[in-house]
Image (cartoon, rainbow, N blue to C red; front, side):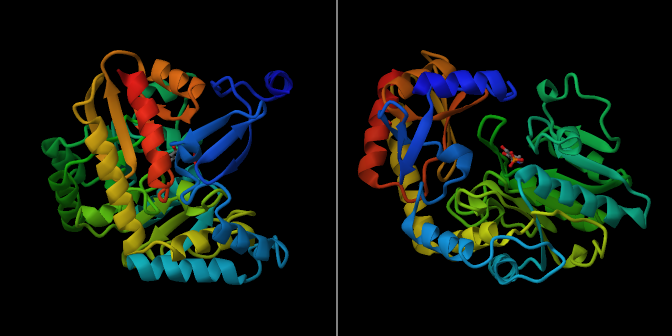
Length: 386
Ligand SMILES: Cc1ncc(COP(=O)(O)O)c(C=O)c1O
């Protein structure tokens, strides 16, 4: 059975992904099952998506209720889930308006358009991003992404992007005072870049320079957002107020939705006809996200922090571990004895799903993973790190 899926996939699905040698067929909570009936503990959540695990009953009930009521209409009409979700996101963040897309890349595309439209009046078109960042796979978000390995073969890229080094305050100051910049876009923890948090002082300096130079502070919370780091959005732990926040992944908890949140400065920057998406804010996906966001509270964040503290206490100083980085339940482990790829493959064979990011093993477990299952998972991981 498993072979059939693999063979059919390899014949007909575009070969853009390096897949593990397993076909997953069902899941519940943090337990996944493959076509041969083998079970796995999931510490990857489909790359930060299934925030409350797979098939969470409350989430399923919210999605099912919407599915049997109104699945889709166009954005030519109002729908309640979209409106309610935007209201909740704004109430919880202080942002003023929300644009919906279907993915992280699309959320960032919107942010890039906000930046260009904002800079239009003063003739400033440059968008600053960081080396080692990741902002998506569309041509514009690839241009924003500061990793050359993603750029090869796909140029030419749109103009007006400048990359600077994370945590280099002199370079940041030079870029943001150049008079050419309309916005800076950055992740609070570079996820795909190896789970590396920015320095708080650097982020706060960026905010100060943005205010002084009329530059938009735009934060990519696609991976860090929606409770992942122990707060609704990671920027809230850096003591800054962004002008634009983008998010996706965990927002829908398993259904595709992305959002670009706009603050006071840019709440009217995009007007009628400036942007759009057929599926953006689809009622079912919006109902899914409404369920996720309505459950983001202090108790959940405390649970995230407690699980993160447990993982760190087990892994810091453990055999085969150089460093443990990240924030909350977004964790990078630099191994010393094996490559991250070897460890991920060994864990898979042993019934554990983990991710990698550059040279690190990366964990993005369900925010509410039962402690017992987490302990089992970490025990397996430690065995293969050593
Ligand atoms: C920080 C960040 N931004 C954007 C993206 C792109 O999101 P998507 O794959 O949903 O387009 C990702 C995906 O990993 C991400 O980690």
